[in-house]
Length: 178
Image (cartoon, rainbow, N blue to C red; front, side):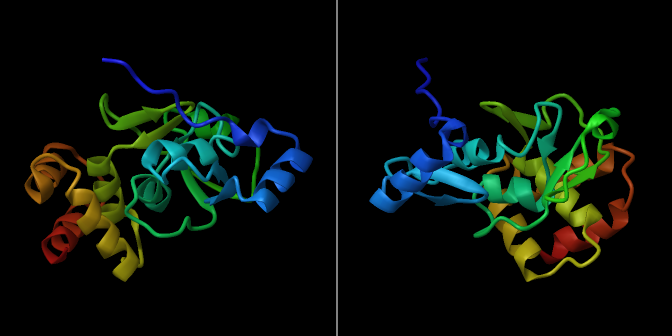
């Protein structure tokens, strides 16, 4: 299988070039960065715009991951990332990032170029468990993400039942309402 190349690293262009190309219309806003107008706004393109903010030791999670997967219209601020296994402690302070300490099992992260993103199933599980205020945007994101999960809500419920995770009961109740 041949893989097509990822989007070009726009954030590495000089600011003057980015500004000129944006004025010409060849670059358009996408999350915290820009993307070529010819590249559709797809998960790997959205992930590429986050690479400038996140080091390789971080992974996009929660609403940020939902945005990467196309389940949120806009990227919420601050960008939500996880360091996992002590990686968060080594990161420099950045007010644009909310760094969480989450653990991931094998297969719960997807690699898009230089950015790791929680899988749709893990993103749904985290939104259901970790959001204090689980509002309409989170419910809508969960519904859209469940379409990307083989087995859908039943698979997420089974995963929650298999693993000893905090707020499991709240997640299962919310999953029933989604």
